Length: 127
Figure 1: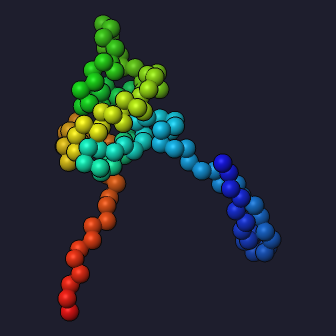
Figure 2: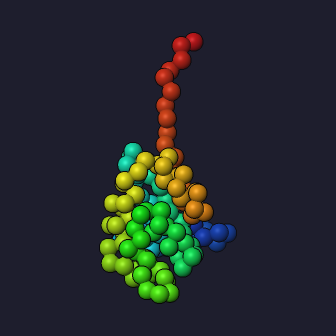
Figure 3: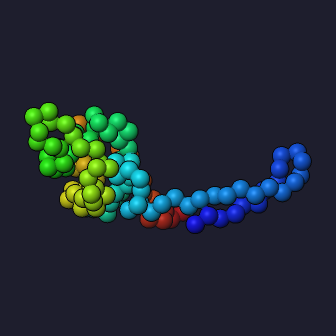
């Protein structure tokens, strides 16, 4: 759904209208390998694989999902968009390990990812 935003034009002082579109829910993102997923411990990881041809086979192996890679003689990987249910598969598979374990696995295989930070509150100090 789109929202309308009113703003003042620079210098002219005239109102303008810009249309801002809301981002699609993560389950409906265009690319499963540039999306965020929840880990077993409730923490979130953001996959950011921009070179799918090179990185998809490595991710499939990290997940223990060699079935995502074709077993033809050329061993060519199928791109994520060619596999039905990729978002759901990744969501389920990434819930198998805690964030710390995924960091070790993904980083050890040279895959690009991010971690969603959390706010940790410390107990109040007495003065």
